Length: 374
Image (cartoon, rainbow, N blue to C red; front, side):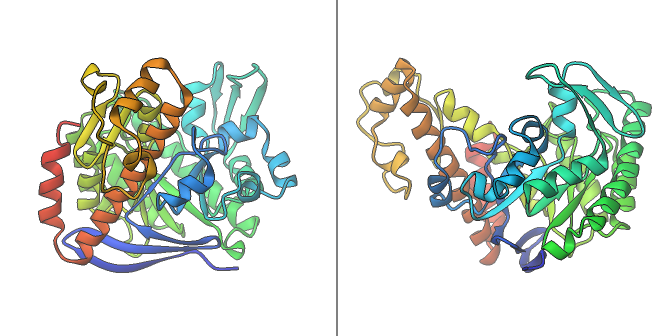
């Protein structure tokens, strides 16, 4: 079994170029992970996701433990087989969804008891159970269970959540090693918490760095705070994390967020934004963001991008896409989602090449002018 490792390939100022080696292949970083919450990237075939250049997708512990259950997925050969994705899979711990989606929930030291948003059934998720579920799913990269405190919040509440997450990190790591995760070529990432308090972020990062995680995630950001706050937290946090390990900024984000986070040394991203936008008639392109609902596209025979390698961007007119969106046809959501995932992969490839060529500052400025307004 291929052991998990991060291979640094180069750096341009703080921006990093690297490669993840996993049991299901390599991932070039910086990388964007399409979100496949329920074992599917919405409105896309797995082979089309792969054709965009995506080398890793994200699945969700909370949703999959409820339906179809991790035990069922395991019995059917694991998540890779179940969803026909033979590349790398990352799963999150389920903690964020419990806090945001579940009905009744009770948080204690042992774990969190919650009521399913699907059928009201009651469940208990502990650090050990979260790792067990991710092991049953067979994901290559797994996350510790943490508590994501909603912002804005009082400092004492943010601190309480951060310290609980650190205690859960220790328990998650012990469970991961007891289940022979490293021997299976899997990785477990710790998650930095601390809200918008720089001191708490630094303390969390330092404590996690002393634990033998294969990588480190920054959680609890991109939850509504201004971009400058998110970037300020990265400025404080990243110097504390081990340079030889991958760094994952969870739930981010817009193209501009990604560009600025790469500039600070982030290696991995995920976000529902490109898929959700596609289902709502919005296209991301190298010319900017386009709302295909707008009447100005009704008579436009041009494609989204005639030079794109993606058929959705290259082969369909804006007029046709406008028609599909206005009629509520499913094909419109499929084509725009395909285009958006392809654009995000194109963006990541552009950033990787810029780092390799020592041109990151120039490319950052050029793309920043395009995306600074979202």
